[in-house]
Image 1 (cartoon, chains in turn cyan, blue):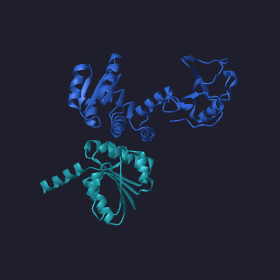
Image 2 (cartoon, helix red, strand yellow):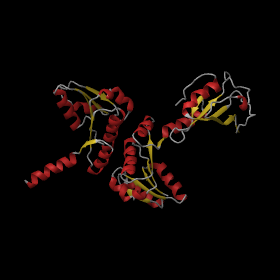
Image 3 (cartoon, helix red, strand yellow):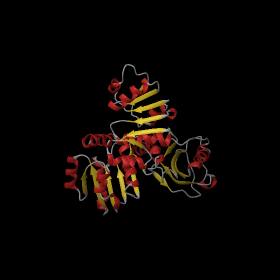
Image 4 (cartoon, helix red, strand yellow):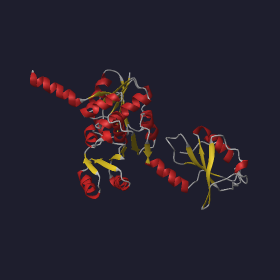
Length: 132
Length: 225
């Protein structure tokens, strides 16, 4: 599988390391060079430096061949835009966007984007811990 | 008319001022406290300090009652989402997104945000019009590109030099809107003669553009972006 991860922060790099270890083809995009330092030495994928909202860069990353695109930058709206480009323009089969703001999540879902909201996931876990 | 503007800088200030002078009801949403306070002192508009891409603040701005929302932030992804949010959740009839990256013009349109303002394209078009090196310059698109307006400079190879407009057979859905000859602007009629160096403004359907260039310049040429 070819997986494109956008955003090499804590989550993105962790994900990229993990998937690469499992033998999948991974490309990570970030617009900060230092972010790639988060990748482990065992990472066997590729990195691409640049702004992932730029169409040309996504083409360079061969997004049209991607099986999965994960948008995990620090900006919800950037993730939303990348996810929409991946899904609606490049027809990538599986697209996920990280969204921090629960209020925006609903709208992203209405736009057809599958989201992961760390905020609500954390709250669920906290609640479980409190009420158990 | 109730307009909500999300963005900042001088442009938003003067835009709001312009709209207010026309009697529109203006609300501005901006993330910077200082900017909001300054604007509140200078404009008779509602100023909201917040993130315009957060549904909460659009609700505060009474987006449900708005006639138009203009997303004019420097960040294209924010502008995209603001317009989508305004349309989907608040059913605002007209939304406008500023794009800084011209490529996003067609990307936004593909993603359903049709009214896109690309400052880069507008400014480059204006400059190109004045400094025309190419014989063909695309001017402003009209109604999302349904009609093209192009400036064609008649070079010495042009097959229509010396001919009158009635003698030139332009393709069916195209019109020669005006001829700029030096400082003079001519609204052409059948007997207007075309001369070398004339800047001809052609209004045409996109599919007829190539044919128009062929007639006026003698060769096929794609519109220059």
